[in-house]
Length: 90
Picture (spheres, rainbow, N blue to C red):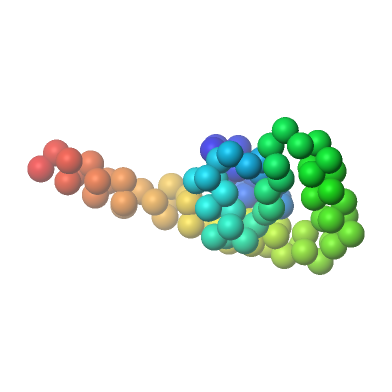
């Protein structure tokens, strides 16, 4: 999970193997990457080739990564965590 956020923070398009539904939801919501079928080398190759053939899409995914990363930054999420802790301690 941390790697996905690091990639997003670095402004990279994310290639994510299937099998990580929470991470999939994040990259789908942020529109910053695509998934490939885990364990399927041919699917991975096809997804990479698709990105090579569509550099405009890569540019859009990268820009969306930067914006998406901001939503998951500590500065943006801290108040939610603190509220949860305060609620649990009350």
